[in-house]
Length: 322
Length: 305
Ligand code: SF4
Ligand SMILES: [Mg+2]
Image (tube, rainbow over all chains, first blue to last red; front, side, top):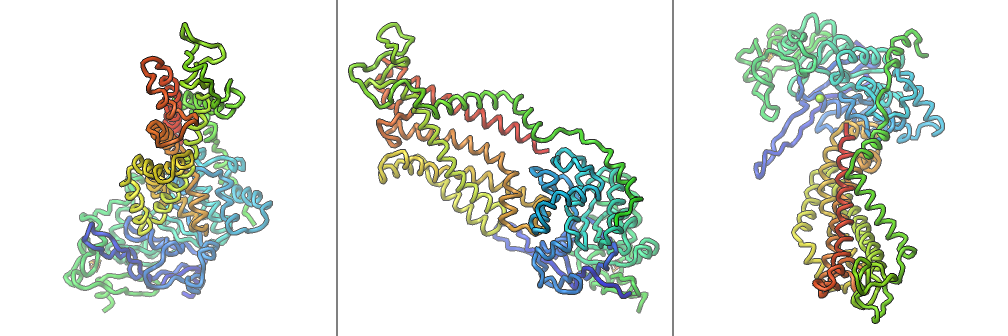
C-alpha cells in the first residue's frame, strides 16, 4: 500500500479549554485525541461519526483554520508549519454543509466565485469574468446566475456555487463537511454525482465528512470511523461495509436506513446517549454503549490493532490477535 | 479536457429556472409598501432640503434684529401681523420663519456629526470585540460599562463649563458619548456573523482579517448599523435641544430650536407660538427620523432570508 498522501495527519490532538462557569476554572475538552489519518492522492476518504465526535474540528485543522494542540499536519509530505494560510488555501478548499450560510448574502454570485482569484491575485482581472463563467459551466449553472444573489437561488444551486468557489483555484484536496445533509433529498444525489464527476475530471482528492453512511458508501474508497475524538476503525470502504469489526461501526451500519434523512444523526439504537466529551468514560470510551463490553474495557483503553489495511481499536481485536 | 458525456446530467440542472426577483427589486418593493418608512423619509427630505437651501428659502437674515418690530404675530392672528414676517418675530424682532429654517440646519448638523463620530467609535469597538472575542471582548466590555456609568447629560454640562459653550463642544461631547448603543449592537451582530460559514469560507480562502471584517462582515451588519444610527441621531438632536434650553449648549444668537424654546419661555402665555413653532420642528424631525428608522428595520430585517 504505497500511495502518495495528499494530506496526512500524524497523532494530532486538539484540546479546548471549556469554561465551567464563574470562578470554577476550565476543563479540557479533547475534541480530537491522537488522530492519525492519511488521505491518498486522488482518493476519497470518508469520515463518519455522530455529531460532536470531532469530525468538524479535524476538518478545521486540515484547512489550517484551527491550530492543533499537538501533532503534525503534512501537506504532500511537508509539515504544515512551513505553509502560510494563503499557501494552504491554494491546496485545500472546503465545501460546507449549509449553503445558506456559506455564501455571503450581500455579494453577487460572480463576486463570491471570484473572491479566491481576487484575494490571491491570480491572472489578470480581465480574465476573472471568463474564469467565473467557466466554473459556472463546470458545476452546471447557467451563466446568467453570475449577476444574481444567493437569495435568488435554490439550496442545490447555492451548493453548486460553493463548489465553484472551492474549485476556481484548482486545489488538490476538497474537504466536504456534510455537503448534502442540508439539501432536499431530490437534490442530494445530483450534488454527489457532480462531486464525483468533478473528481474524475480534475483529479481531486476528497475528504467526505458525513454522518450519513449511505453517502460515504456511495463515494468513498476508504472509510474512517470516529468516536469521541479518536478514529476507532479504518479500512477500505468495501471491507468496512462488508465486514465491520468495531462494535461502534456495527451499530452505525445497522442504523443506515433511517426513515427520515433530515433527522441528522442516525438512531444508533445504542440506548445511552453520546457521552459528554469533557468527561469521557474510563477505559474504552465507547464501553457504556457497547453491546460486547467486557471487564477490561472499563479499565483499559484499547490500542489500535492493524491487520493489513484494516485498523480497529477494540479489545475484541486485541483478544483475537493475541 | 471536460468529458462531454457528463453534460446532459448537468443540463438538467440548468433547466431549473430562477424565479426569485433580485434582492434589490424586492427591497424596493417592500420600501414602497412600508408606510412609516415612506412618511418618515418624506418629512426628512423636506426638512433636509429646507436646511440645505436655507439661504435661498429664508426671507430674512436670522440674525438681523429690529427692535421696532418685536413680537409680531404669525399670519393666523387678527392683529399685529406683518406680511413680511409670516411666522412673526421674536422678542428682539428677528424673523421667526428664518430662524426656524436655520434652526433645522443646526439640529441636522448636530445629528449627523454626532452619529458620524459616535458611529465610527462604536462600530470599531463593537466589531472588534465581536470578531475577536476573548480578552479583546472583555476589554471592550469594560470600556462600554465605564461609558454607561457616566451620565451623558451631566458630563456634557461639566464639559461646557470647562471648555465653554459652543456648537463644537456640544458635537464633540455628544459624539464621544453616544457610541454605546453602536458598540453593543455591532458587537452582538458581529459575534453571530463571525461563526457563519461564509466567514469560515473566507478564512479558508486566505482572506486577511481586515478584509474579512470590512469586506465580508461589514456589509451584512450595515442595515442594523443604519437603524442604530437613526435612533442615536434622534437622541443627539433631543439632547442638544435640552442642553441649549438649559443654556449649556449652543449659545445665542445661534438659531437652535432648543435655544429658541428657552428664549420664548417668558412669553409662554402671551405668545405661545414662540414655543409651539420650534417645539413642532423638533417633534416633526425626531418623529420623522424614528419613523424612518422603524420602517428601515422592518424592511431590512425581512431581507434576511
Ligand atoms: S474495547 Fe470493549 S467496550 Fe470498547 S468497543 Fe471494544 S468491546 Fe466495546
Ligand atoms: Mg460538523
